[in-house]
Image 1: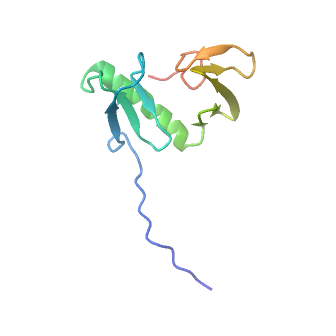
Image 2: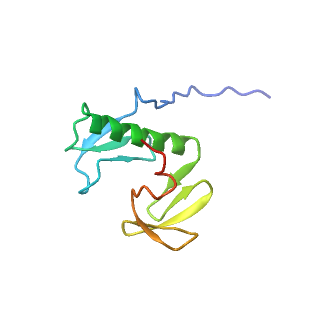
Image 3: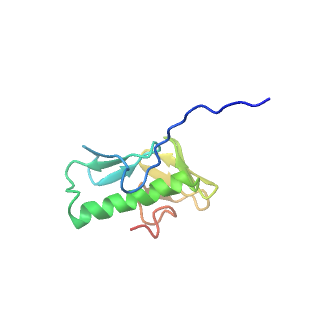
Length: 115
């Protein structure tokens, strides 16, 4: 027995069509990548400046990691390369050492080597 697939229209996000939403973010946060493929950028950031472009490029790398399954997150944890890193009130707990890092720290493996 055969069946017909329904007409499906998916929007594949690329740097050219990723929805960038300007909004008020917490102090010190320039941008955030979201699981739905959107990027929030602080309303204080000018997207036409080098800082704005760098922030968007950085978050696009997170979007790519989420799309490929390398990273995902919830309110309670970040899952990166198969390892669960608990989230605790603005901090990430290293599952190997027990050390706490601030969210966004360059010491976290998913933040290393990002633009």
